[in-house]
Image (cartoon, rainbow over all chains, first blue to last red; front, side):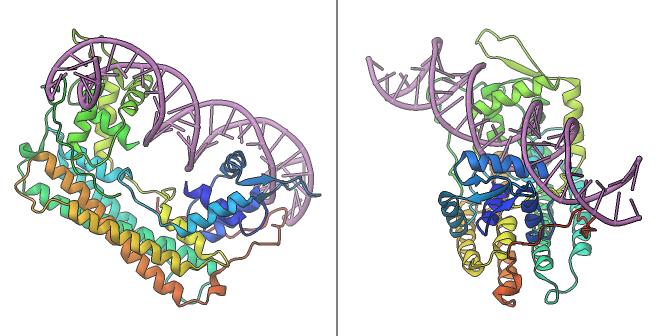
Amino acid sequence: MSVRQSLLAILDQGPCYGYQLRAEFDRRTGSTWPLNVGQIYNTLERLERDGLVERGAPDEHGHVYWQITPAGTADVASWLSEPVTRGTATRDELAMKLAVAATLPGVDVASVIRAQRAETLRRLRCLTAASPTVDADGDAEELARSLVIDSMVFAAEAEMRWLEHAEQRLAAHPQHALALSLATERPKRGRPARAQAAKVGA
Amino acid sequence: MSVRQSLLAILDQGPCYGYQLRAEFDRRTGSTWPLNVGQIYNTLERLERDGLVERGAPDEHGHVYWQITPAGTADVASWLSEPVTRGTATRDELAMKLAVAATLPGVDVASVIRAQRAETLRRLRCLTAASPTVDADGDAEELARSLVIDSMVFAAEAEMRWLEHAEQRLAAHPQHALALSLATERPKRGRPARAQAAKVGA
DNA sequence: ACAGCCATGTAACTTGTTACATGATTTT
DNA sequence: AAAATCATGTAACAAGTTACATGGCTGT
């Protein structure tokens, strides 16, 4: 959803043609995330289908300019006014993997965590190396890039901390205490009063 | 990819039927992430298509048991042995939104950040409220749940820190210095020597 | 001439996700 | 009988992603 919205927000600044849109996206994100050109055209067609943009006639250079519609502008406004919500459904690949792995008998969770910590540490080093040295001197593109990389750094640091936290907590438990073997009891028919866990987040 | 792999890993413990698989997934993740039952059957069919599981004949109760194949077992093993890699392509919805928003003339980035901080703080409070109080007494399911929630807490805290960080850095710049208007210059034809930013991560 | 980028597009595919249909069983 | 759950499935869709085809233009 974020690519789609970003492209729409850029189009809210004025009409663009496809290739130009990619360049704008690259500029504004500091070229952090690679974006296949083909995706631009796909997304534009889907935005057109949803009535958020309109396709213009090709100009003398053959460039096809796309223009945002009032509905599109409204969509951008609400995107910017409403915060990003990490709902209950937001899956984290690593958290899910580790949770499942921890309940798998015969799996050495500690080694899984160790391998992950090594990888995350490697990434962290790579990120700090790629991070611009100072903050105040660069142009806007460099600032955007630095901001994005910082967000990755913060996320990687949190991941490291969580891995250490999980390592300790799991080490405190004997392996068999958290390994869940397959429930051989098939669930009772009828109303089983399955304790519904309290939903977290909104 | 994570749901698919998790289901496959559970199947590696022994044959399951669809509904049972969902219960196992719920148990092992502490019922943190809701999982529509229909997705189970979809995923199973796709795993079958990829030769990772095999569909068994229905038993006397009409339950359709699925069994993992050697290829499936190998897949699980490599999933557990290799760490999760947050590559360059890993998009973060919030980071992308903020990076784009910061380069949009006429957009009050500060208020966007303020709204986001309020939301993240709200979520953080909700998470700590939902987090089990102590660590050592619960059963395996409770432990898994607590681990997952902790990962969300760590991620939300990192998000908060990054938002504050970004707030400060953006406040230090006059709005016009980081606002990128649409590049009216269309890119030059031919070989433009577009400075390729150094790729971050692997 | 050739390499390489600019530029538009199409087709296919992946994972995730939901809505819906269907029927059996069981508790109330 | 009604409600709720168990259980299997189907059909469709969203967003992202890639591979490929096509042609024009430009610098070497």
